[in-house]
Length: 202
Ligand code: ATP
Image 1 (tube, rainbow, N blue to C red):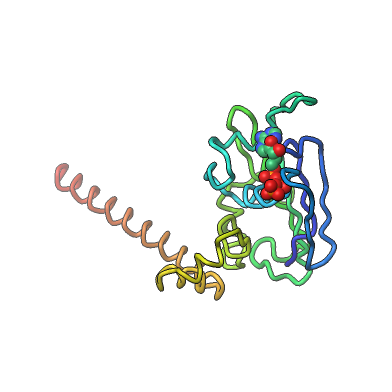
Image 2: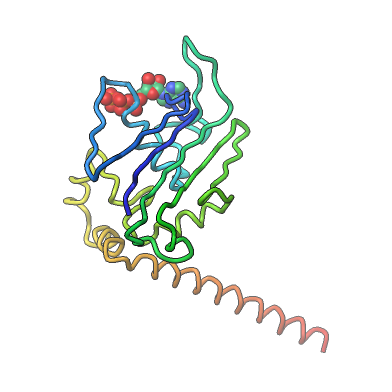
């Protein structure tokens, strides 16, 4: 799996529809200070489901929408789409058969945010599930920010374990187990309620 294209529109400084092609495994983004290099990384994180505004260097989630400049009026929607080349079929599951997978997110000024997988509307969870265990995700080690290497070097053993579990593809199963345990707990609670009601009626 390889990220091959990033499309942005109305996202931070990328007000006009912009397509960035990443033709090889190594792509450098260069430009003067403030030209929008980090905004591209924010876009990648955002479309994969980042929900913390501060991690996107903003205060509210609608801060990712182009807010206007001296030359341009603000817009009311931001869109980012990532296109992954999945010809090696390393993304498995429901979308595993596709050679190309598109992941898209939009947000409008009223705060309404939508996600799409290969053009069909989906839940945020469908996107996070797709990448879980691949090493890719809004907070995964595949996006290495300034200071992150030293964080890893200084990490406590239990923090380091989280990175290793994601690299080994185990985190997906731990997440599933956590969800199943929650469902079992809820079912037990429901059974207890049912038993109480039965006692009352009987
Ligand atoms: P540096 O090299 O200094 O790290 P950079 O190339 O990474 O800079 P970014 O931080 O990506 O630059 O971009 C900053 C620019 O994006 C600023 O000019 C800022 O005004 C603009 N910007 C950020 N959010 C918005 C927004 N919502 N609307 C319009 N412009 C925005």
